[in-house]
Image (cartoon, rainbow, N blue to C red; front, side, top):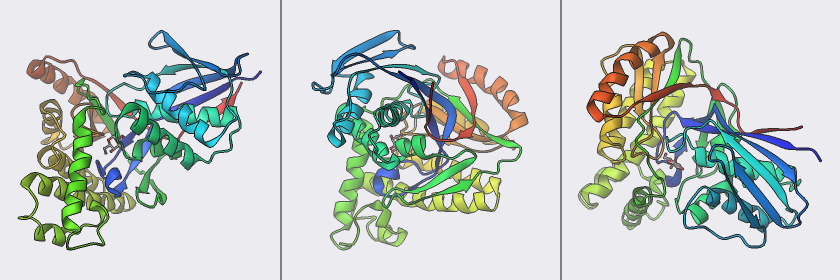
Length: 370
Ligand code: GLA
């Protein structure tokens, strides 16, 4: 029997953070770091086994007995298989092995890559016939129902749907999308890993979602057409400044402005105006730090370190927040000089060792038979 090899990438998000679950816009792309999954049939009708080469661990389960575990990487997989089985009865016994070079807990969506790798892989392996967007949604649901993180759709969408050399402008309400070409010239995307590990399942992410919903419920009292923060204008928001609590006002202000920044970033990319793009990244960071309050001192330090450096056009915390990586738009030739100054300074300040990599905008999940 043939084996199926699937490559499922992590992602970066150029701008548009915490906008996806507010029905807003995002601008992500997959990167050249991925989980490689290999699928083979076994003799069983219902048993499957998944082996992680990185962890040196495996688990086995019966397809008829899926349920969330207390915690752990198994949940991403179990949740996806459960979602697939709700749409199809064609799964049977299989073995899968995984190997990843996506840094875990760094805000580059190793979890979405795992979910989508399993979803795309099993869809292909068992010829389930599900379309890519359905697989994206199954990945997102697995995270909601098995992992407990009420994430938006950006990460799974980027992992599956990306196109080499482009970012995706995704409208998270309609799921309409367009590919925006990235003409970076002498510049690149440098990810600097703070090694502060976030956990998306940690309560703060879900708290932010809840706060956004509370703000919408209040604004809807006089604007019934508002279904989410996507529909709130800056004028409406100012009207509500003294009605909303200070926290809810700041959360909403960030989301409303971040949505506008995504559209401005697309204009900047289309006119190859990288300095303007970079300025938007810095603005996004300030909002994430002061209004949405999802940054941390370590990442603020990494971003601040770049501010007076003319070779760095923009820098911000990326992903769910509370740690992970900063995303920097930097001149290719300036990377080693920045790191040689930043790494010792960071070590001195926080006692932590930095790591970094240049992320190449890449295509979405791919597969081949061997
Ligand atoms: C995580 C979630 C995404 C998105 C980002 C923040 O990566 O999985 O859905 O909300 O945080 O933009």
